[in-house]
Image (cartoon, rainbow, N blue to C red; front, side):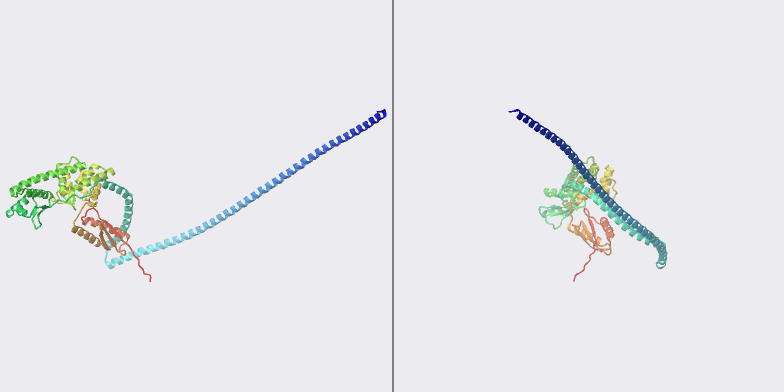
Length: 512
């Protein structure tokens, strides 16, 4: 390569290099300017974004402020409405109070007027009453005392009505309170004492092997029958009854002696006065021994000890006594068991209750010898032979002849009623039953205002239908008590009788 070419190449290279340098410089300046512009754009973009965010924040703040303001306005509106309602309610209340005040004032004025009117009426009534009293005294000739008696009768009638109402309320409360407990105690007592059948009644009929024996009993000119009657104190009735004679005596022990002796004589076949006396003495010994054994057995069964031999003897004699077909000894033993059970339930003295129940009917053993009520007779015998006074009081009070002084006395009365009133305990003849029922109805019909009466439940309940136009509800209560009291005072009956008074008003109309 020649020099010219080299120089040209160098020049060209320099030119190209200068141009490149210049281009590079220009490009560097342009790049720096572009970066600056880019930075300016970025700054401007950030400022715009911040401004946009600021606007958003401001808008949100404005929205929130508007929302808070709306809520506050709504709350204020509600409060204003509530205040208006409260104000309206208070206004109505004030108006109501004003109206009531006016009404009270008017009522007070009316009351004042009525009080004055009542004062005038009272004065006029007093004046009229005085005039009426004077006129009544003039017309009827009644004195002041007689007029007072009439007024007292009117007051007594009103008082009776008030007392009947009060008695009914008290009885209802007492019945509701005590019925459950009483039923429980009595049911327990009855369940624990089982005696389904009544003991046999005393036999007063002596069977004979044949009718020829009647002649032998009578004897020549009646000497044998007279000897038997004198030795035993019993009447022998020899009638047309085939193959039997009847023993008649109010003394059940003598009747038993006569029955036993006559059976021995009939069995032995040797009947004459000398033999009769020996057989009767032997029969008396056997009966006395049986009496003592029965009394001791009864006391032992009940658990009563330390009784006097005479009391034991009286108790044993009850073996030969009956009451409405119920053997009295079996009855007192049963009553003692019942009284003991009830006393134990009520925390009372069981021994006193049992002793009083066991001995409450000992007076029946001597009623044919001593006059008076068997309860008082039994109490006298008990006191005579050292029975404690508490027991003697139970004996005397079990039918109301004396006042009972203890809870045990009341329990014995209840046990006595339970033993006598249970089904199958007592029997009575058809004639006695009809008489008792008829007497019960007649007694009820005798009261004023009674329309009709019916004895039901085998004479253990009487139902009385009264005239409603003559007897009111309170009068029905008084009538029921009066009839029950009259039945208690005038009739003898086993157990108790329920008195029911029925008052009803009927209205009848026919649709045509």
